[in-house]
Length: 124
Image 1 (cartoon, one colour):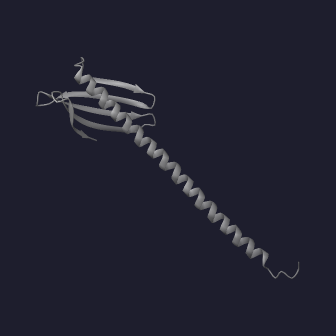
Image 2 (image 1 turned 60 degrees about the vertical axis):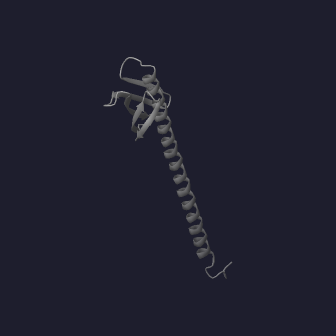
Image 3 (image 1 turned 180 degrees about the horizontal axis):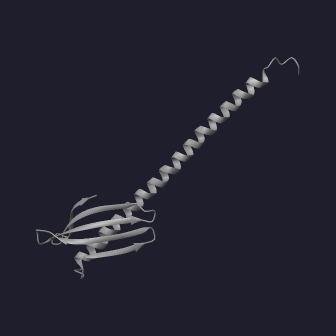
């Protein structure tokens, strides 16, 4: 025990430094993965709400309901739309506004042709 000549202390320091590096790397990967999952979920939730808003507003136009705006609350966010007339009689311009439950806001502009019953453009 007296003849180790200082081998234990440097070995412990080296192993400790190695363990700390591994823990640091693993924690950084875990945090990065969690943030990616959160951002991806937020992106897909916003996309889903925009698609639902487009369907609601197009149904509003096709059924020729009264009023030029509407709002729908979903469990994961809220969709609002406002329908404008354009210079072309058969076309309608729809402004969509989406607010997710976490507070992210997204907007889109849709041009819809009533005669052809199809979407002409979608701009976010």
